[in-house]
Image (cartoon, rainbow, N blue to C red):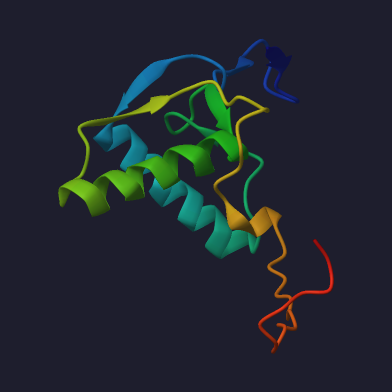
Length: 120
């Protein structure tokens, strides 16, 4: 998907969120720093994160969060940073692992005190 960047002549923005590319850890750490700086200065999350500073290729916020989650899980499991992190197509049918999308609800169930039931 290509879009024209407003006000910057012929430079086109290219969304690579649905490709399979391995980003080196230096690139991903730079993206994380730029994400944090944007969040700190603007007070909100960016809609897109550029692969390189002043570049024309970017990924969506959803893809960035997916990559960040996989990055953090790798560190927890292996006690080191990965050498690269893959941009991979997000399957809309894949169950979400981010619980920000769900509301946790607790139900209280009354239990029967007797050793018999009224039904079959």
